[in-house]
Structures are given as structure tokens and as C-alpha cells.
Image (cartoon, rainbow, N blue to C red; front, side, top):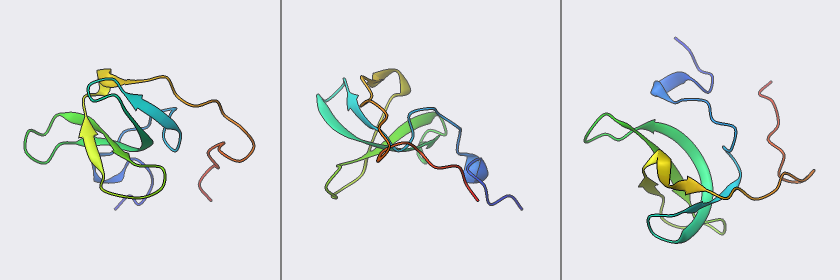
Amino acid sequence: MSSGPESLLHRAHPWIGRTVEDTATGRRGVLRAVAPDPETSRPVAWLAPAGGGTEWTTALGAVANPAPITPDTHPRPAP
């Protein structure tokens, strides 16, 4: 059984871990995952507020304007 980032039907995405805009709602949040919506099985973006709070989903096409990569926000490779 796989335990990497592709497990649980998650998809790789270059913006995971970065703050992005959800153009459908105008909110900004951290892209946590790209994975199927449990109700429709279609892949969606899973976002969470940067300071914590309730996660939400949005269409992949609604994810835009990622925050710049800095030494503090650059995703680290899995061990």
C-alpha cells in the first residue's frame, strides 16, 4: 500500500503548501491537496485558511495566484 503523496487518490500539484486564491469565493488559503470530492469523485482543490480554520474545496480551475516561493514556504521533499 502506498503512503506517499499519491495515496488516497491524491494528485501531485506544484502549488501544494502555498497560499493561493480561490477565484470562486475570493478567499485565500493554503492548497493542502488535490483529491476527489467524496460526493462526486471528481478531483477538487482542498484549501485551508493560513491561520487555521475550516478546510474547503473548490474546482481546480478556480485556484490561481500562488504566493511566491520563499525559503520559508518552499515545499520540502518527502523523506
